[in-house]
Amino acid sequence: MRILVVEDEKRLAAGLRNGLEADGFAVDVALDGTDGLWMAREHAYDAIVLDIMLPGLNGFRVCATLREEGVWSPILMLTAKDGEWDEVEALDTGADDYLTKPFSHAVLVARLRALLRRGAEKRPAILEAGDLRVDPASRRAWRGEVEVELTTRELALLEFLVRRRGDVVSKREILDHVWDYDFEGDDNIVEVYVRHLRDKLDRPFGREAIETVRGAGYRLAAGGG
Ligand code: CA
Image (tube, rainbow, N blue to C red):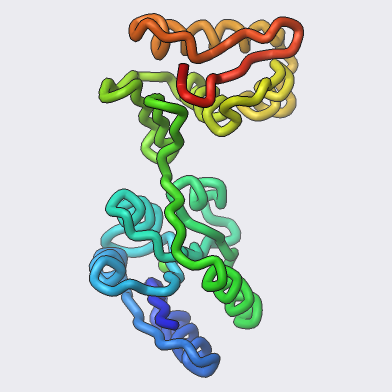
């Protein structure tokens, strides 16, 4: 099993290499994002350990670029405990798991083995319901080939509906996932934003993707309407 470690802290990188080699892995190390990206493209690694804060190209960009290019090696992202980056963002860019520094070697190896068991599956970063597509990482949305401009909140609502496509979701669930948990306002705000989405993604295209389910909530057609 060949692992690529992308980590710019030289001592940590050397420690990871020694530790993983002692566990029987073959290990290559890249000390910045640009080299890491290049190496990950050139060799089919069984897994990649990817730091986020890197010179050249940060870990999010490396991860998102690999996924865009169809490289599906499992990626374990390393995040800093008090970092400005959050873990959700790591997963949004197509990483499979994350580990917060500092971590124990045993935990790292256990997580890596779990990823290796799963292998490289296609996990597109872009969510789809028919010809409706959302890329949460780059915050873009399309109806067919047409890119549609959405506000941050509209995009978050669309992402939630696409993730739950085919299911009825209540206004309360939408508020909990798309607005803050402590949102105290009127849940009619959901109706307002659903209308925005219909005006941008359905009406101009002669579609009706977002169905109102009376007394229950909304359902995005699994096929995109
Ligand atoms: Ca770093």
